Image (cartoon, rainbow, N blue to C red; front, side, top):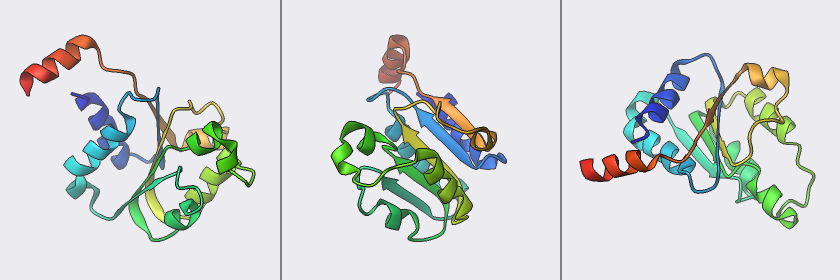
Length: 149
């Protein structure tokens, strides 16, 4: 199940794109998909993977800049600021933040997981980004998956 999406992530790592933006409704399996990918294809990544949750707001910038990696995964991007503005005491410019991470050149590839579509992207950011809109699996896919396992 989700083999098509796993292949998209694998091809992203080989592409000239810097950022993979995975978005979709809550509970469709965005984080689980990336977790499964990292477990299955860890050897293909050939380097460190840094995973951070944006919900860990106060440690977030330090975690991102902690070390160089082949792959940086930012989960729950924008969720902390959209759900509860109290968690975001400083103004948050979502595009500037992504630009800063990319321009920092600490991470070869970046995956951002969010519930918000990337409609806020600038044209410069769009050029280096691949998008993956994750939709819930169909009932027949779920049934086939359960029968196969």
